[in-house]
Image (cartoon, rainbow, N blue to C red; front, side, top):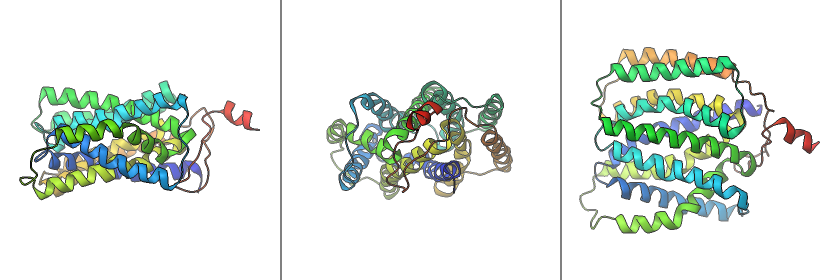
Length: 316
């Protein structure tokens, strides 16, 4: 299996895991304050990440990598989780999920700005059409939206897109799971302190689904999903593999229907088919003008991945 195919497979698995994030967060905010939820999920994942780093005896990141890790942490450890948790207090999971359709375009743009990627012009056509289909579908549905919640979701998408691109770029040097682990550990002292500060006086009124939601977003959304996702972006390309996120709203809506009792319509199925076509088209024309990345063998020990031809020529 070549690296590009492996990247798409890892990216798809990461996307599937992330599809459950918003429904799980929606379930969790029914009993937990959004701030406590954000800090607690980061603290739990941070402790697990610390165990991983110690178990595999990973070297500390270089000083020049700290800024990138701060960007990653600001986007996916704090920014996106906190903003979406506040938004999900007033809107449904289905409503917030459709905003994820804008995330591939944001990721691709930041992939160009921060990851030195240059997809073909036709790629942007498929990416734009895919985003327009998801956004158009959202506008035709009565999801009970809120203007302020929509603003929070839009800002969350921007922060997340930047963190995805920055993390994928750094993954070429540190490795996929190492990036999210170091970002979580870097945030751990602050997140743990804020968790204690915002902790409710009693947990007696917390319903079972809220505990399940907290467990899912702490273990899967904050850690395991990123192990697959960053590896996929680093191997298959930030802009290209990022288009898989066009499918995430629809997987999320299916989960919302199954777990939260929301409706899955034929229009959603139709749009999903069109989005799959756009993802396939984006994959076909996302041939980057930099080199194909390489990495060490082994899933947990993915190492540096050269990001352009200059790097490869320097190694020869």
